Length: 523
Image: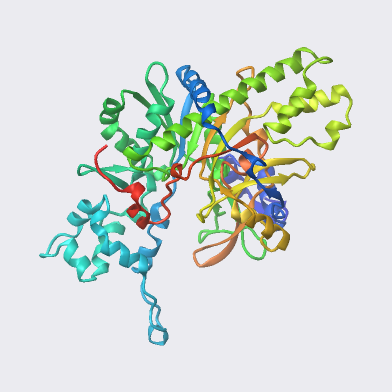
């Protein structure tokens, strides 16, 4: 028995596999439709800039926002949320290239280009926190790490660092790599998240709750590190950690097609499923049951003695979230309790001036009752307050005003891959951007009645990216759901706040660990 779907045919075994993963037939068909007819690139209306979509806080506002943060976290319900499944292989891309075998026609090649990243890595090798571990891994036969590095003998060093027979860093998640060292004791990115979160989200009982989304194969490794370091950091910070872990649900995986539009099957004839991307983590966020969640990436950390700026600004963003939530609740209760005399104009002004919901023409032209319902719909949404860093050339998404299919303009975080760079007009608007997204945001997950929002109901399910990938040497098309903070939050209310560049300390390559924000001792 087979079942026809657009551009593909599902067998009985396929249907059983879909059911096992929790993917409905309707969703599978919709995925195929999107693969065959990809959505148009997002057309931005204009970039968000200070005074036009990006708020600049004055120092006079800090005290009140810090007070609101304190009140909120003391009451409990605030969590730190970190996507931590990112693989370290991309960090070591330049080093892995030097381990790749030469092409068979090497004699016909031009003189090889120097791998400057590898040269820097070898020259500065003593400055990495993992240097002692690497030195032990290459010891033997009278060789030392330094002698090999000085002689330019890169292969034994790289194999000891990256291969499974050595430290195996290429196959590890970023979160479990030693980023920093304090008095000879190494500290992973995972540990630095514990240190940074502790003072920010601890409640009145000194409980500190964090949640990490990880790959299934690394779950036990994260748990082992936590148990190894828990007592040390709890004593150091005066907190009790409650740390949860979750993995990406198989129901968020996506199908692939071959270049002829047929379902892509592996060597055994089975459907090929691929992880759907960070946008799929919405289910993990939805399952927390938290009131407020602060989100940042696993590798966006710095040394303990330098994290005070990020710590303060995470408090400020949570405080601003609480401030806006309280005003939103006040307006919603007024609209609900007084259908005819409720604060309709105040609500529309607030949605427009604070939440960036430019009034749709339909609202302005509607009757009072219709306008009231539309105003409630605008306000009754999850809220996020997102830190935005001044543009510095780092890759990533940015804040834009985007016009939706309904004609309404809203504040959105848009990834570079979603933009229409073929359009000259769009390129000019992109070039005019002044800020980018460091993934540094406070999110409110409950409404004015303390009811949890149904987060999947605020997703734009059609805003996906069709990517060209390969499997087993065969080309394929697959769907990627842009980040949790992109289309998964497309219909949230959003506030962008300018934050200092010091809150953003990314780790794109291993040599970023040589930057000042990742160096130092003590703490």
